[in-house]
Length: 184
Image (cartoon, rainbow, N blue to C red; front, side):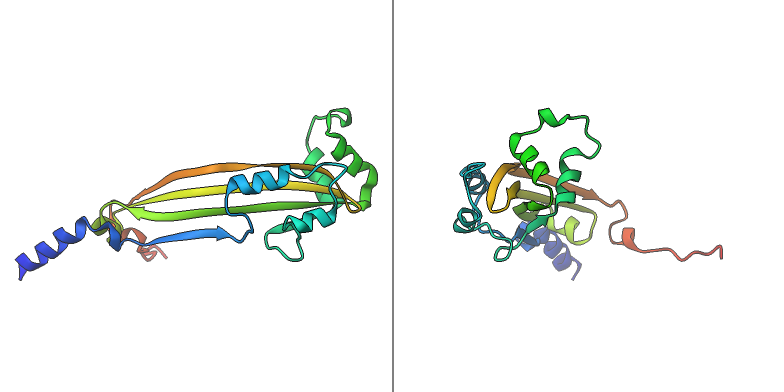
C-alpha cells in the first residue's frame, strides 16, 4: 500500500499538465498590441472624426473598456502636479483646454494575458511552491476630441508581457491557516 502511494506521488510530481492555467482578456476588438497601436496611429489629429473612430471600432457606446474622460479628468491627467508649461504641451492638448467643456477624452485600456502554472505539481497542489508564467500584451491609449474632431491621440503599453510569479510557502498548506488569538 505504501509503495503504491509512493509511486503515485512520484508520478504526480512531474505532471505539470495537472496544474491550472487560465487567460485574462480584457474585452477588445484588437487581436494584438500591434493592431491596437496601428489603429490609434492611423488617427490624424485635427482631421479624423468621431465617425472615423466608429469605423475603426472605437466607440464607447458599443465597445467595452473605453472610459469617457471629462474635461476635469483631462486636466488632471495632463497638468495635475506637473511642471510643464502650456507652451510645452501638444497643440491638440492645448486645443482641448481652450475648448473647455466641449473637449472630451476616451481612454482605452485593453490586454490579453495568459496565466500558466508550471513546475512540480505536488509542490503546487500542496501549496509549498507555485510558479506562474504570464504572457501576452497590454495596451493603453488616450484620444482627445473637440466636438466631433480628434485633436490628440497617444498610445503605449507593453507589446510583450513575459513575467514569472513565484510563491514559496515553507509551511505548505498550513501557511494559510489562521491561529486563534489566545491572548484575548
